[in-house]
Image (cartoon, rainbow, N blue to C red; front, side, top):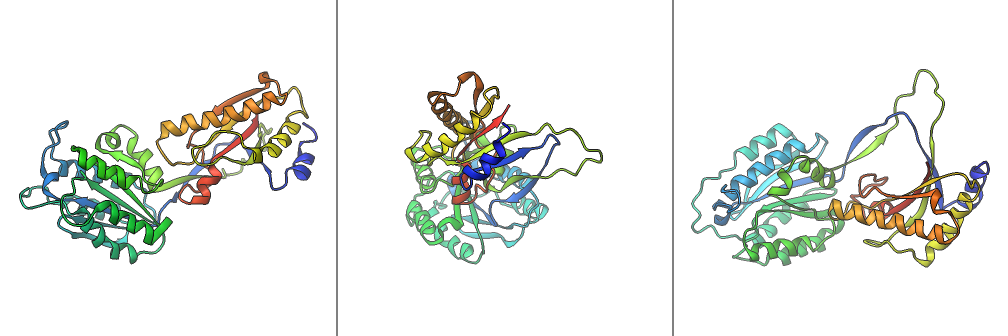
Length: 350
């Protein structure tokens, strides 16, 4: 591939970029996906009832989940707060995130209360939390812990939609579900369906080993590779050459489109420079949706590009398709443009 650099400079400007994966290990820097987060806990009468599967009070399960989440959130400069609804109360006013202080506030939540005359006014609670959100700057994650069994006051789905209309991409509503009725499940699903940014979670999924870490990476922070410290003695480079396409797939799409063909033709020209070289075709996704689904989607994207190259005359023996799902983002999944750029395919030498 002796003409690779020349081709990249002349033919791939604005279409392909060359990056190098160094053999030395890189550390990971945690960067915020959001600027603020609000815990929003349902303290209605239905939450003080037992969950059939665990035998625990749902309010106790919610507090346990919030404690585990707080332990997992990295100590970055978020603005954090905690509010309760049904009835609406301030448990922790917005301020600089302090893990120990928030843990104390969560632990102070009363879980021993009379279930009677405590109906779930979730829609009203979302109206009450609006002034809190409006007082924050930057992007906000509103994390609701509820069984969804709203039976009083304003329509919660309509109020959640109104918040999205008002704040747009500066707000993402996540619901941690403790639903045990069809109505509660329906309301929660409808709120989640208002935006693709919403992460699906419940008590069982979050309390599984490693699950809370994965959830935190989707909601609170991302990891960016930091360049390793330079080695004191130069070593022989074993770098792989990576061709990064400006070949970005649409949301939930894996098919090759007409506008991708010129880029793929340029890629084939580079692959044909060295007929003995072997390549990995790597598919990637953004962080929207379940991890398992994204893994499958990335594999389908890689397979689509590999199939096109084979049909164009590149020997299948020189190619291997792999999917990396959402695990290797290059851009901020907390933004629309970042998610778009992460829906990509790369080719690198093996």
